[in-house]
Amino acid sequence: MSNIPEGLQYTKSHEWVEQNEDGTVSVGITDHAQDLLGDMVFVEPPEPGQQLAAGDECVVVESVKAASDVYSPLRGEVVDINEAVVEGPELINQDPYGEGWLFRLRPEKNGEQEELMSAGAYRELLESEA
Image 1 (cartoon, rainbow, N blue to C red):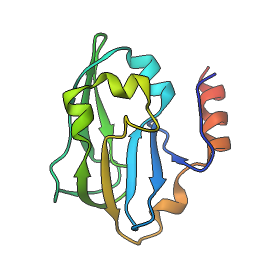
Image 2: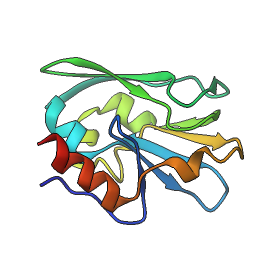
Image 3: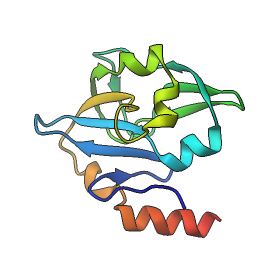
């Protein structure tokens, strides 16, 4: 079973969201997603300042198996990208919930975050897909 840390929120498209103290959120792909994709070889992040809507395709990740889109879990403005994963995409495989984060977003306060899944709900989703 994939690693599913408590304290994060999750999407059905396998992104995770972590609330930061400054009001931003960090976004990445789950351990399950990186495991399915395989060894990462390329990451194309969004541009800082870019406005995203929930569900927008905003990152392209490529692995030795396939290219895949990553979707914004929330509406908001991109405030930072993780240059370390651009230079070393394998960080996503090595530490998807830590050093492998993709971008930070300043979300709009519109209630979308309450619609994200808890670790338990995400675990149930994965079990139902198995």
